[in-house]
Image 1: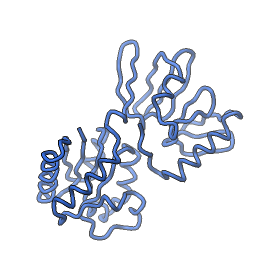
Image 2: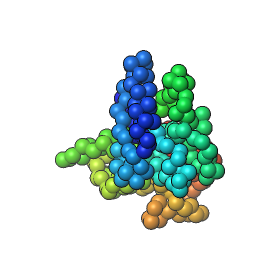
Image 3: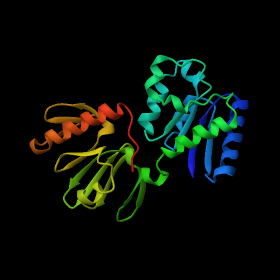
Image 4: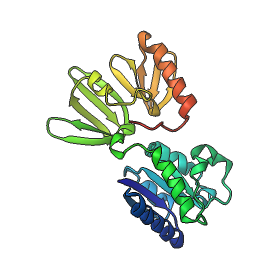
Length: 242
C-alpha cells in the first residue's frame, strides 16, 4: 500500500486527484491510502505519519510557504513530493522537488498515470523505511530516518531518535546490516551516525542536533569522505533508503 498526503484547499482539485488515484488503483492493482489536508499547517501538525508521497498545491508555496518543502524533507525525508498546478514556482523551491513529477491539474488521466508510474518505480516499499526494535517489554517500529544516531552501551544499543531514546540488547554489527551505509556511518567505535541529522562537522568532532560527538582518528578520513559524498549527491534530502 502507498500512503499519500494531499495538501490542497480547492475541493474540485481534491476530488479530481482522488478520482485519478482510484482509477490508477483499478488499473494497476496498486492500493493507496490517502489523507487530505486543507493547508500546510494542518499537514505539518500530523506529519508524524509515514507518507510515501505528498501532493502539495503550489499556490500554497507561492503564498509564502517556500520552507514547507524543506520541512517535509526534515520530518519525513523519504517522502516523494509532487507539486500540483504549478503556474510559476518561486526560485527557492527549485531544489526541493523533481520537475518531472509536477502534475498540472489540467492534465488528462493518461498523463497523470505515466507520471505516477514513473514516480512509484523510484519509491522503496514502505516497510523498507522502517526498523523493528524489539526490547524486553516492547516492540517498536520506527522510521530509519528518525534515528539520529546509535550508541553502544555495554551489550546494549541506545537508539537516539527524534521521538526519544530506545535501549535494546544487541550489537552494532547486527544493526549495521539493516541500515543504509550511505547514511549510517561510524564516527568511532561507539557511535553510528545518521548523516541526515548532522548539523556541523569539524576535524575531530561532529554535531548531531545539539550534541557533539567525537570522531576517532581511525574513522576520521572515512567519516569525512562519507559526509562529503552525502552532501554532493543528496544535499538537504536523504537518498532512498533500504
